[in-house]
Image (cartoon, rainbow, N blue to C red; front, side, top):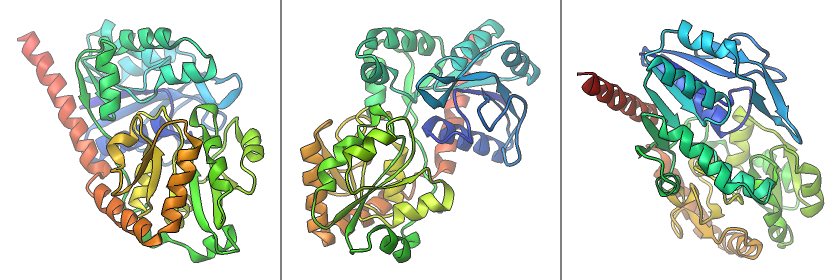
Length: 376
């Protein structure tokens, strides 16, 4: 198949949309298909074509940094998008988290009569609630319009699927995310790193992700105050300065990727995710692959990932006291925490990107067969 992937983000960006799109392009290429990625240009990825290491051709379109959040780029769709889409002679268009560039891609695909698969990845309504205090209904109207035009919408979790169907989006199916169980593994636990982060022998409780208002990392404040606990934060974003003040004693490591990130995960005693608006939550799955017990809100994607009392603990969203108590419970019972970590690793071992990528190809085939049946 010749597939055009229109995405709102692509590496070197570090986020769920970028990572999932990269893995999708890799899998398509590995299976002998011909993908083309269309993505916003950024500070280091300039307007033009693919860079070294990309699994397929990448067309970069002009973009602007989001005001107040420069790590997020907003594409400026123009003639480059249309030229790339038609020039690739696509048989199918894959829209990754359609918002601006993806909306334009959907319109072009519809005009050209091309089948489309839209992947829901970002809770825009939750973002509107966090940043604006209003606009949830407007966000859902936009998402409903875009996804209703697709031949198929893929939701990353059961909670996301319920949200989409509950807001009137038709033709929705579940498509989860994979995890690299070779990169993220318990064997990377690094005692030297642990001594550097917690020289007093404290238990290490970690968070990894964007440092932004919607992630509510400040909920770790109670854990920071627990005796014998060192909170370590990986990531960057607009909330970093305020979080340094809100989390006294926490260690901030900045952005980490690749083997550095994998070593960080494997060296934790407990991983905590605090954001209540995750449609999936890849970092939870990476921590589980690393053999680490997880504390996460009982909302969104973590509901599918964390088996409460087996691989970790689920807590009420926005509840700092519950986060503190869950961390304290796992720290106080190392045997239980280690058992959770072992079970977590076992739970994700079959969720490889290869397996998930083949599921995606099955969804593509379903859409193409449906188009063929309609034509007949």
